[in-house]
Length: 432
Image (cartoon, rainbow, N blue to C red):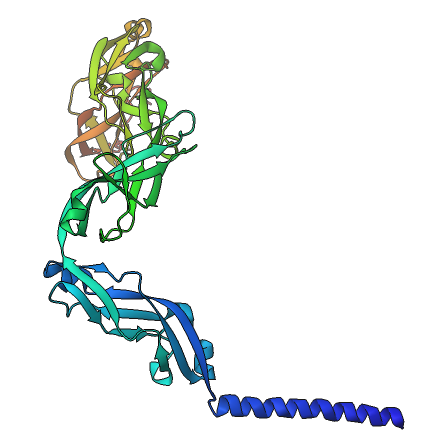
């Protein structure tokens, strides 16, 4: 009984605590309990400095490092949601019209998820921002870049590209007089591809000594530096040959000058380039000797060596000759039933090309000209393309395309024999 009694006491104590917490949460949240918090060292931002103030040839000389502490009061649920790092204090400079000390009011801007009507500023470390205003002068200076480190073996760099390449500085005239240029440092250690970085710059005087002057202002925070890192690759120049019977690569020799060119470019671009095709040559059309000149164009993303602008291809053909054979016999196919096809053209001159020994031994009978009459279905004369094949000469081919004028006519019906007409060759029986 005693153990049961102790267990009941414990349960009652736990329930009491839970009820108390629930009541506290109800009062604290449901009744919107007001709490306080402190946000320290909020930097002051200045609006209108590069607009209205600059248009009046005025600028801020001091006050940039001003910070404000705020003591805030509001519902616990609101302050729980408040991200202190997103609270901004903005002072508007557009009302400044003269040089000297100026006092500016400021606005407190809260994150979007917090309603400012629920927050009260109990107090602040300062209720205005004091700045010094001076006359604005401007000066444009160039930006230079020092490349530090070495790229990977087999790679090289080209001129660094800077954006912007000049800086427009704003400040008091005496401060700007000593500024000669700005400089960034671009690291290139082991690089195998183009490096693009946003780099902080340093101002230098005419003795190449760094300048540290917070009164000199500019809209540019970082300089985008692009360091092209490239490599080279030797690429062959090629021709594409279209062979035909008797006109094969074995019967010709092509000399290309230069045979190879060296392309420069990004590593990943060059990896996809294995050769450059100059031309497509139909070997059946070649003469014993010919020379072609081709302008060279670098593939996209690459460059050619300086002075390399063209290539020359010289082609010599040996052991090949041509001959004209006149064909007078033709084969007709696909002739409509009941019709007859005949050649109007008496002879067709066919040019054959191939190994000289074979060409010289050929006769017109070795050239087969086939004429397809499909889809001709009415009588008349027609110009019809023909198919030319060579019988027994695999190393010879017909050169060019040919046509033949043909006539389609109805086939005349053969007369039936007269049954009453006796065969005169058979012996006649004597009449009785």
